[in-house]
Figure 1 (cartoon, one colour):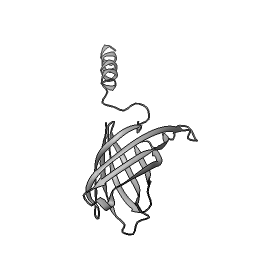
Figure 2: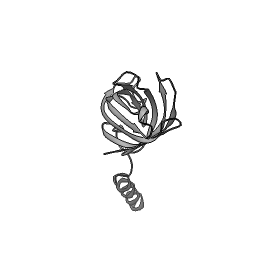
Figure 3: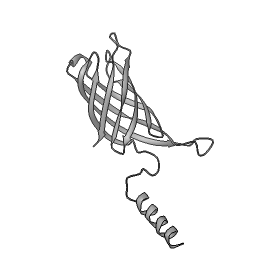
Figure 4: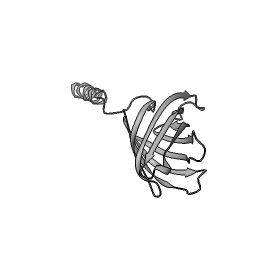
Length: 143
């Protein structure tokens, strides 16, 4: 019986050390990092996101949140630079964002990614509404 109590105490301590995520992932905040495309080459991506929880039915099917905010991207090829509004959703640790340009002639981006830690998000993108489409990857960290 004493060993069972000691094992329960050890497990409780392990679960409280901060290494495991509790609650829904937090995508809200400022993110910055690298973006790299087949056409636009290497650049930087900045996102500022807010997060609003959505109620899922049936209960217990995970978490889903609505994301909104702004974005800015700069590339080696300055013609690919852009910025505007961001909108999308997050389900558990996966994110899907549409980056809508704020100026005519700029590309829109469709991002699909994963929160790989509490401060790191990475994934792929493709452009739309462009004369020359592009695909690539991104990796951003929470600031």
